[in-house]
Image (cartoon, rainbow, N blue to C red):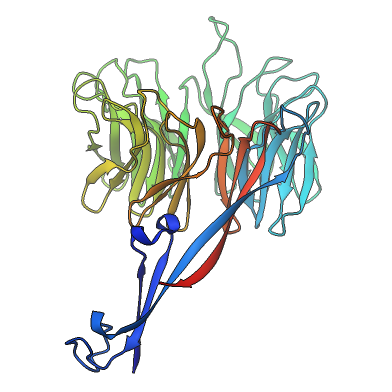
Length: 438
């Protein structure tokens, strides 16, 4: 009987940690094995095949010819189509790319206006836009009728509300915006809501400076600040009670824990936060099921903190950008056993060039990083065998591709980068498989 075994290929076989090793043989007990036990043993192996995932990097299109580029960024996917924002030198536009890589213009903003904060809200696009008579306000693009409109002039007149953090729960979009300049000329931000079913807009909670929204079940959690001496802490908007309140004061008193980069794993929110004189900015966890909070990982012991940011949840792990006191690297926290470690060791300088735009495709984490030699380029890290490699030095020599955004779409990886001649344009990392006998 033929038996086989498929495993992750050892690093010495190459493939940059993305390969699989297929071993086959007869279950005949050769080499002091046990015959017909259904297990392929070392003496029974007849053939070994290396299934190696290879890739190529290609420019999708020079959207805005010249050295400035189109600056593609804010990638999102809706209904198997990728959307992103570009600037063609005179207009901001939303472009779409389908699975056959047909590139189309979805929406062009009026001349002299901009598009930022592109977000998917159900089957619609929401962004911060403007007109000649209004400042930067929240807009919606509807694919059904191909039109875009301002949902409300939150800050009336030509002043801007700077709305952002658009987050959909059910049919309601929650966002942060300001409706006045206040006594300082800057104004405090409020929590707002937009009901997509009837187009109504209302203020949920005033003057709390909300940011870093995350949805848990039917409720909204976020970082916010009251004016009563609690500081910037973790808040919740309970939709069933229509109530907004502080759920955890991680740094008690008037000082703040400044929770940021909130991400969800199951019922637990992981975040970057600090406990003041006890711990600096580190990885904290809050369980929404039992209202408990704890320090998940103290990367840099003491009050200095690890400068933790760029949190991304992948399965049972949290990947993030942090420093233990020497260099910034990509770190990982494993929730099943509460362990943490530096996933990369790239930095040769003490700069902040650690992992940015962390994105997962299959078992590989892609990110932008500067190793101190080649500039900011595209890197990859295999989660299974912990290997790390530079995917490509796109802007070779002393240059840097200065990656603006990375997005996994249709089985490939797309990113915005500058090769030194076309400016920032849209590039694709496409994968294929090659089988060889080893």
